[in-house]
Each structure stands twice: as C-alpha cells, then as structure tokens.
Image 1 (cartoon, helix red, strand yellow):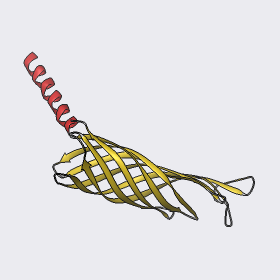
Image 2: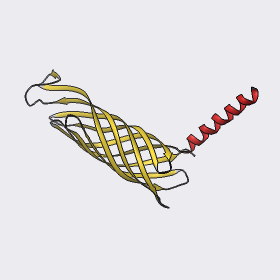
Image 3: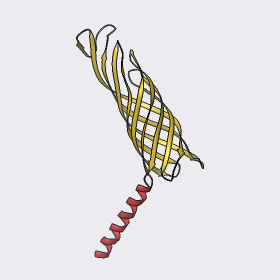
Image 4: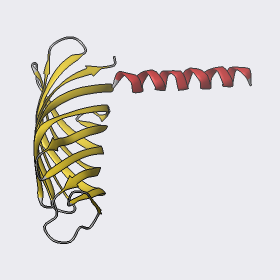
Length: 180
C-alpha cells in the first residue's frame, strides 16, 4: 500500500511539472478605439493573462483587460473585462504567429449626457449614470517574437463586438514569459 501511495504521489508531481512547462503569463498595453451605445472612447488599454499550451498548436488563455477609460465633456466611460480565448499557433525560428477567438464579460460604467430618457440613474447636472454588464466575442491576430530563452514580445490586433453595440479595435504590445 505504501508503494502505491508513493507511486501515486510521484505521478501527480510529474503531471504538475509537465503542466507548468507549458504555462505562460502576459502583461501588456496598447491603444483602443471603442463604441458603446451612444458613447465613443479612444484611450490606452492594458491587460494581464495566463495561458496554457494544451496541444502542440493550441493554447487556452484567460485574462483581464482594461478596454478603455476616457473622460470627455459628454461622457465619462470605463470598460473592464474578463476573457477566455483559444489561440491557434504556427511556430518559426523568430517566434509564433497566432490567431485568437474568445468570449468576454465586460463591465461598462460611467456617466453620459442622455439623448432622451435616462436608462440608468439621473445625476446632477443632467448626467445619466450607468453600470452594465455585456457579453462580447473577440477575434485577434498577432505574433510572439522570441527575445530570450523564456521571453517573448507580443504584438497583436484584436476586434471585440458585443451586446448593446459594443465594438472595439485594439492594438497591443506585451511581454510574454514562459514558465519553463
């Protein structure tokens, strides 16, 4: 019984090592142009993500994105999202070309000057406060350039489209670290 227990622990430990070898983290930033209902936003964005290679040419990635954060005379709008995506990749000596398909849950909040009825909470002076959650799809294309043994620089374009006329075009650059 003791040998079976030790064998099981060694098997579990080796599975954890294999899973860690294919794990990576990303931190990045970029620029977004977005539309949401009657508001437009053009601002910086940032994101954090963890990914895992589950097959030789496939990754799964989960993360957080600050979609936009802009203040204008007619609107103050902020968008944050959690996402889950699948990435297909093609490798070369200089890096990996990838495409990304995923879904996200975005929280869009802020104030705006209403054009008619306020669907949120009316605040002084004549501004409408809103805080809404939307579901969106995302598609992207990018390249991870090798810069070291475990380090890569990611350059990517993403398009996001969702409920309540949410759409965003994002150009990002990030740092990817492979936990080998």
